[in-house]
Length: 237
Image (tube, rainbow, N blue to C red; front, side):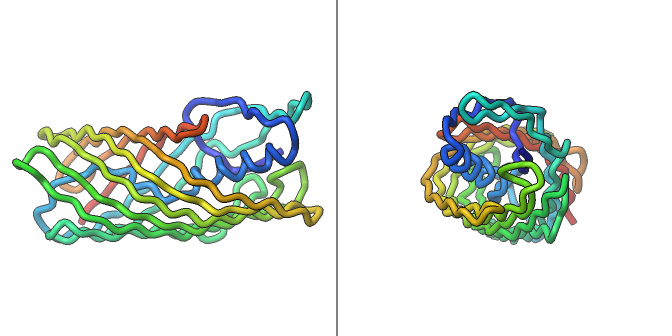
């Protein structure tokens, strides 16, 4: 069985039927493909553009349906490029567009955007209010070997984060709420749909290498058994 899924710590999938497993697949893929900031709330002093590359790892893992255990083949990495414009007032907008990326015979299409506001308090504490929406489509052998399945999801989320600005480091934490409507159409024509509300927490650390370049590390925790880690390279100009 193959599908695109990223998280830091391998987990067990507690599904006892194929339908339960498919619903769990929908939930995990939805968290994977949603729009995450993967950047700190920061002090804004001037208008700027940002180019960011999110890099997430996919560990080896097994999948179980009842007593059947099957190895899952995944790619070692998933990359998501982001373009963001930040106005000196603190308002910003971001965009992710991944057209037809194929990894291990699975074609992924992702379009998402975010908008929000950042502000500094006493020049050291910063906060961010963020809204994000994404649409994703994945085609390939998701439910079983050599199948031609189609996964589709619409994800909407809101979150708030706070950070503390040291000279070159910004540690930060955040909480949020989201909802996702997703479906998977198996190669045999069967369609499974699901709608789920979820909460999330995240913590991160940003290291400013110089005026234009920084590195970001962010860990997400959802109200399911899913955790996701991403490292990002951010270039401002």
